[in-house]
Image (cartoon, rainbow, N blue to C red; front, top):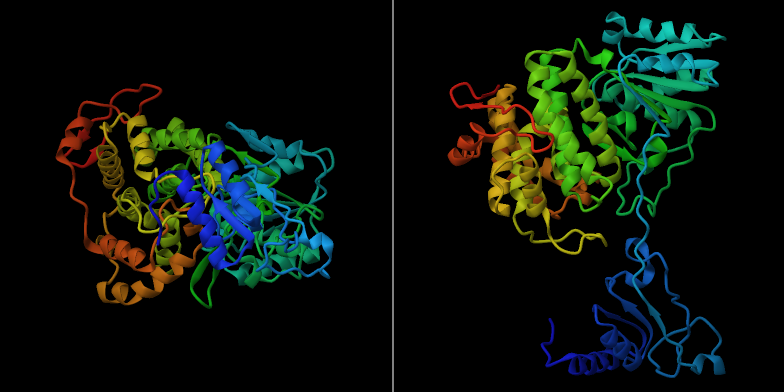
Amino acid sequence: AYYVVDGYREGIERCRQMVEFGGMGHSAVIHSEDEQVMESFAASIPVGRIIVNAPSSHGAIGDIYNTNIPSLTLGCGSYGHNSTTDNVSAVNLLNIKRVADRRVNMQWFKVPERIYFERGSIQYLSKMPGMKRVLIVTDPPLIQLGYLDKLRYHLDKRTERPQVEVFSEVEPNPSLDLVLKGRDLMERFQPDTIIALGGGSAIDAAKGMWLFYEHPGVEFEFLKLKFLDIRKRSYKFPKLGRKARLVAIPTTSGSGSEVTAFAVITDKGRDIKYPLADYELTPDVAIIDPDFVSSLPGSLVADAGLDVLSHAVESYVSVMASEFTDPLALKAIDLVFRYLHRSWQKGDEEAREQMHYAATIAGMAFTNAFLGINHSLAHKIGGEFDIPHGRANAILLPYVIEYNAAMPSKFVSFPKYDHYIAAEKYRQIAAHLNLPAATAQEGVKSLIEAIRALNRSLGVPATFKELGVERRQYMAKLPQLAEKAFEDQCTTTNPRLPLISELEEILKQAYDSALEPQDEVESIYKQQSFIYDPPVEPQAFQRESGMLQ
C-alpha cells in the first residue's frame, strides 16, 4: 500500500507518523533526487539511520547496493522502541543520526593477463617463461588431427624442453568424474603449467582439474552455489595459480572459455549442467590462433557460431552490461552476421579467422556482463535431450528476445539497472545491423527475424519439434526443466526476472510455435546490408532458399 500526498512536506509528516506507529529509533529510507527533500526528511524523521536511494529491505546492510555500510549499532537514543546490546547509560540517550548516501560498489573489467592472436600465435609456447612440467588437456580427435604434435613442436623448440604429460580423455559436456580423474593425474605429475587444447569442453574440464589440483579439499556442492554479487557470495573460490598456470588454446570458435571466468561441469548423476563462475577460473594466458579452426566441420561451425551470437546478445542486454562490455558485444554481433554463413558455407580463411576472434570478443563481454535465461534454458534442455549447446541457444534466442522485450512482471535487483531498457537495447542491436528500428517494437521484430534468417541459412531448425525431440517426453520434462533453469546462475542477470511458469511457457513455444516471418522486414534485407559499421557489400535475403548470400 502507499499514500498519495500533496507535496513533500505532507509526505514527510506521513512518514514521521508511520515511524512512530512502527517503532521509532531504528531506520528509515528515502528515494529522491532533491537535496532539500532529503535533508528535510533526515532532520524530521526520529530514527538513527537514514538510508538514501537504496532498497529498504537491504540498503542498510550493504550488499550490492552500498559499498559504505552504515552502522547498525548506534544505540537506542531517547526515541525509544529500539534495542541495543550495550549496557544502557547516558550515552545511549544521545540521538545520533547517520545519513547513508548510496555508494554503489565499483564495477570491473577482467580478462586474462595475456591474450595472443593472429595466425601462428601458438609460437608463444616456445617463449613463455617458467615451463618445466607441462600437462596438456585435450581430446582424441585433436590428437588425430595433429594438433597435439603442433603444440609439442613449439614446446620442443624451447631452450630447455619441459617434461610433458597428456590427458586426452575429454568428452563433450565434461562431468565431475572426468574432472577428478584429470585431477588425479595432475597430483601424480605435479605440473607447473596446464595447457587446455580444444573447444569449450576441454578448456572447462581443464579449469575444473586446475581448481581441484590446487585445492583438493574444495566441495563441488559449494562451488555451484548461486550468488547475486560475485564479490559477496556465500562461498568464495580459493586462490588459483600457486601450483600451476593455465594456458587456453581454443580449437573451436564458440564458447569463449579461453577468456572467461566460467566452467560448465555436468553432474551426470542428476543430468544437470552447472555453470561454475569465479574470476579465479580465468586462464592466465589465451592463445587465439585461427590455424586451429581451418578444418572445422560445417555443423560445428554453425553451432559454435550461434553460441557466439547468443553470448553477445545476452551480454548486451544483461543488467550488468556496461560501457566497457557493450562495444565488445556489438562487435561480436557484427562479426557473426558478417562472417558466420561464409565460414559455414565456404570455410574460407578470412571468415574462419574473424569468427575465431568473434568468439573471444564475445567471451570478454560476457565474462564481465554475464548472460541470461537463454543460457539457463539451453544448459538444462541441452543436458536433458543431448542437444548441442549452440543449437539449443539458437532455437531459444528468438523466443527469449520476444519475452525479454515485454514489460516484466518482476524486476531484477541490480543497482546500475534503474529502469527497464531491454527492448531499447534490442532496438540498438537492430539499428547497429542496419535493420528497421525506428521504434523499440520494430527493432525487436527486425532482430528476431534477422536471427531466424541466419538460423535458416545454416540449416538450424526453428523449433525443438523440427529438431526431432519427441513431444510427450519433452512436455513431461517441462516443469522440471523450468525449475532447474530458474535456479541457473545465468538467470540472475537476465533483464527480466522470470517466473518459473514463464520459463515453462518459453519452452512450450520453442517446441512447436514457430514465430511468423515479418514480410516487411524481409523486403528490407533485399536492399540493405546487415552490417552498419564498417560498410560491406550488401547481403541479399533470398526467400526461395532461405539463404544469406
